[in-house]
Amino acid sequence: MASSSIRDIDNDSVRNAGDADVLFRLGMMYVEGRDCERDLVAAHKWFNIAAIRGSGLAARARAELTENMSKLELARALREARTWMTMH
Image (cartoon, rainbow, N blue to C red; front, side):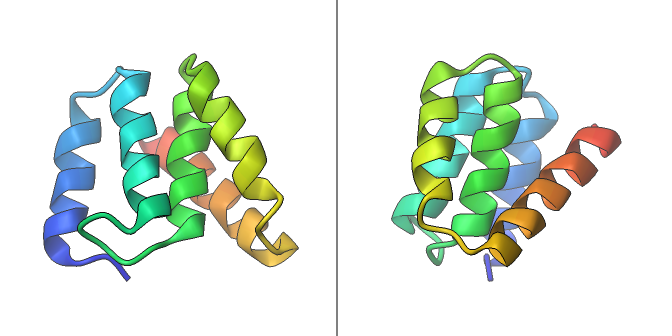
């Protein structure tokens, strides 16, 4: 689970982010476990949102990541992305 400071970064970064690159970098942070625990579900969520906003890099990273996720993890990531998109 991400620490509260990571959640703050998530919220602060994306609150002002129409920028798909910011969202892609957030996904990379979770894939690499940089300043947080490695979390493939969170990474996929941010890659998915970034891809929807036009990032080709995020779309490729999402496709690659999907190969390493279970169906349950993928369903959770998609649900979380959909929830985030609905709220923002």
